[in-house]
Amino acid sequence: MIKSAPAVPFAPRTVMVTTLISVVYLLLSVWLVGFKTDQLVLIAIFNGLYYASGTTRKFITGFSIFIVYWIIFDYMKAFPNYTFRNVHIGQLYQAEKQLFGITTTTGVVTPNEYFRLHHSMAGDLFSGLFYLCWVPVPLLFASYLFFRNRPLFLRFALAFFVVNMIGFVVYYIYPAAPPWYIQEHQFNFIASTPGNTAGLKRFDELVGTPVFQSLYAKGSNVFAAMPSLHSSYPVIVLFYGIKGRYRYAAVIFSVIMAGIWCSAVYTSHHYVLDVLAGICCALTGIFLVERGVSQPGRFSRFFDSYLSKIN
Image (cartoon, rainbow, N blue to C red; front, side, top):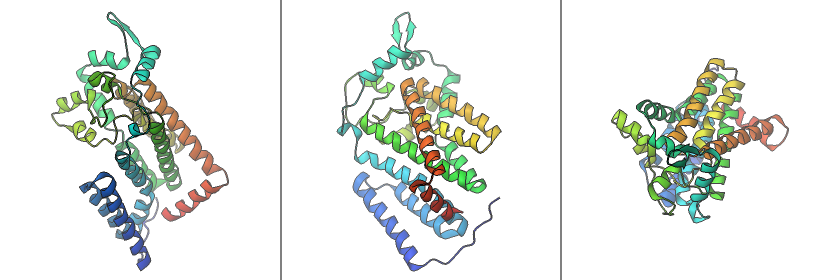
């Protein structure tokens, strides 16, 4: 176990810097995406943990990688990808049908269309439960690694960040509509289309609570289906679970990974192609981080420097 770090006095310069960062973040957020109480909560959590004790300061410093990711994701609302390039709607749909189409009595349909007509209560329930693992499982695993294996934690956090940055770049290079978009709007492009729970609506109805309705109401951009980062995250978790030799956890992570992949298609949130692209993003990001850490260079020096701040 890693020993708790003692609290230390803070120099005026440290207080000034953290305060300045908080103020700049708030002002920039209000300017780009408008004021939200979430912004104040984030500032309170960051400053509260930073000043509470030595251990919490190291914890929030390590998790700042995840915070930066979340801020970038939120700011995407200010720069919709469909304003930079045309959205791919029919092209991706036709490719999915050609590669993974299912033959029925009425013709060839995509897997999404098939499951939309042939869903079940069990499928609706498990797809919702698996999809709820999307962010909590990576964050819980990261928290565990922070207290048990900080070098592995930092590798995991950096891989998570790099994979997301790769995904965000692809979003702007190849804006793509999700399957549910065609089900709702056919092949017509409608800018600023709000988020949609699609097949996950059936889960909300089963549990009697608008779980996914509230989550998708906060989505940054619906034209960001390719790649599926929902499918990327469990790959990262599984890789570092195996790397850390957490055998039993790796089995659980494998089940969750397969469940999220299937649920993404079952609920019409992603095509199989999106899922495959998400897997490729995850493997690419992991490769880049592992290669960067293991070889002498700027990245490995950054890794060692950051690690010294959280150890």
